[in-house]
Image 1: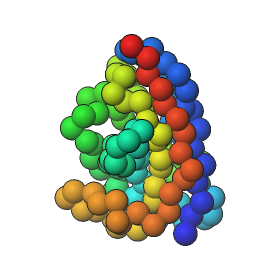
Image 2: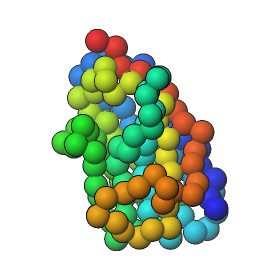
Image 3: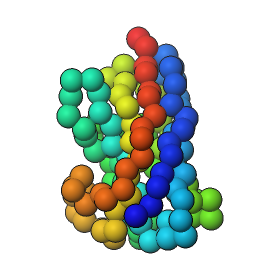
Image 4: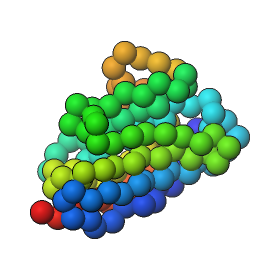
Length: 124
């Protein structure tokens, strides 16, 4: 398993931007596909974005064109750049690691390691 710590959350006005970071411990970070999920109060956790091992990316329709996931294996870090934020993006954002190198549609069950989350709040 890999341990991860998220950072970069905060309060931002609608239309603003934030960049989330997730730094992992261990030497095997480059062996994992890395994803971001979020959970709003009273709602189920939902998939946001994933960076597969082969460096391809996949996004939820709700964030496509606004969010960008990237990774820096030298820093054991995955990023989520969030632009044009909307109030409905308000949630606790989690990063997660998966040993699945690729899947047509990511599944939460594939992710064996999770961070503690960082709060993103978007005001209208």
